[in-house]
Image (tube, rainbow, N blue to C red; front, side, top):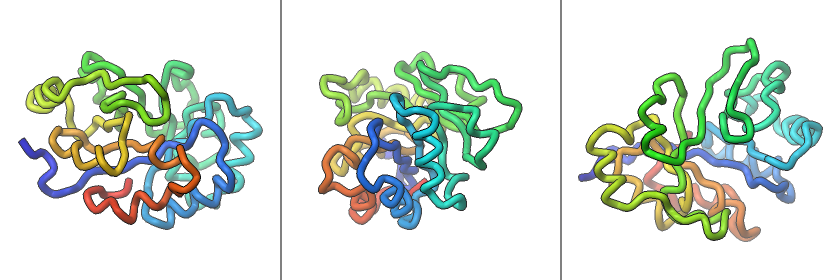
Length: 203
């Protein structure tokens, strides 16, 4: 079954967990290329390093950035929202923001109405995490799609690159999140993926 007949896959980019040379400039280039949502994920970064990176990105792009750490920064920056994860499972600030979260099993997808969207991973073998193999077979993903467990609110994560991105259209995912394929090697500058990705709408 082909779920994406309109080719309208949403594409989200997640930053490298480590800092990248000229990272702010590359992020800005992504936004200029049409990216609408970037996840800022730096598990080992200090709060000051987070602040420095945000300050290096033009404020007009801040509403397109979701953060994975230091949720209190939503008080000072006009950010898109926060992403809940094992390290930071709760958002307890007064400011209302969009919330997404990470899921690693189909069981977690039964209670996602309150979220902007969720990541399901790893859909394919991870590029950024060596030895982090896919949790889901083709048949499992197809069945979950047919049952509506996987739907437009579910974003595929893990092993997404130029080869696997078109395969997402076999299922009912709302889009895909890209990490390793963009940042793993210096010659694959972040925005190059977009010039060959004719099957996704940048989000």
